[in-house]
Image 1 (cartoon, rainbow, N blue to C red):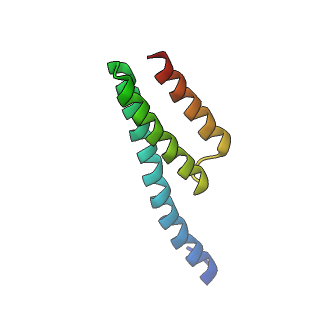
Image 2 (tube, rainbow, N blue to C red; image 1 turned 120 degrees about the horizontal axis):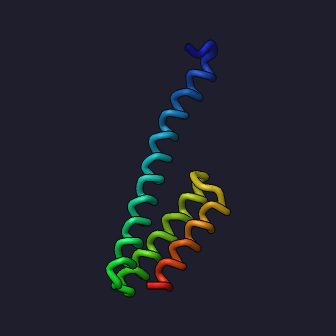
Length: 86
């Protein structure tokens, strides 16, 4: 139980932020899966299009503070290698 009004507010904010962050992380996983599936199917054009979307969403997650910059760069590089090898 929070002892102060400010802690009550921080708790409410944390719940709201957690929901937003979970939605962003979930979308990142979905976009990553789309890239992996397109690369596995051998459809290079679809893989590149999915990669662009995944990169954009990853950059947005960094801007919102959900991911750190190096983590995002590592994930994007991994996807780029996957698409270029297919």
